[in-house]
Amino acid sequence: MMIRKLLLLVVIGVGLFACKDDDEIGFDVPVEFERELSFEPIPGGAVMHYYLPQGTTNIFGVQARYTDAQGIEVKKSATYLNDSIQLLGFNEARTDVPVWVSFLGDNMAQSEEKEYRFDTEDSAPIAFFDSLQIRPYWGGFSIAYTAPETVNGMVHVFYLGTNPM
Image 1 (cartoon, rainbow, N blue to C red):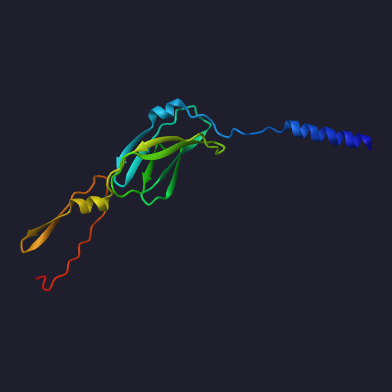
Image 2: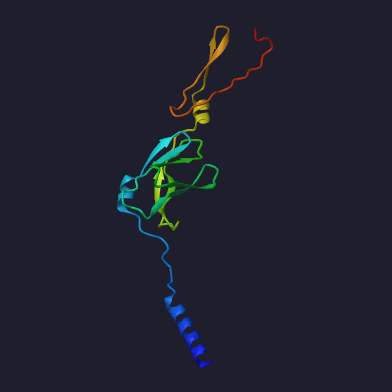
């Protein structure tokens, strides 16, 4: 009976001392990443270009956290297989929009977030209405506007009149 109690105490003691306190769950951000991080303004947002150096096998991906034009916090993630993330959700052009960028490890641990800033361009609807010109044209009218390069789509124009002929 005494041997069982002694054995139980040894197992509990080993169990207590074998436990490790994991206060540090993150990991350090490689310096190469910070040098290769850039932002390109696009209509309605920006593209964050990043580079994960070769040999970083413990890095699974990158995460960006920002607040869009409606005040909603957005988190975008991408794996090491990509090289960019689209940060969307803006209407009018903005400057110095804060974004917090971090790494995700292969065990999904997150590194410390670092703050960066990016600019955006007007979204397609805003650019359409800001550059819209209506001109008289052969007994009717014509519409001219300037669309951003990277936007595709169409615009429907409806008009009301008593006798369109």
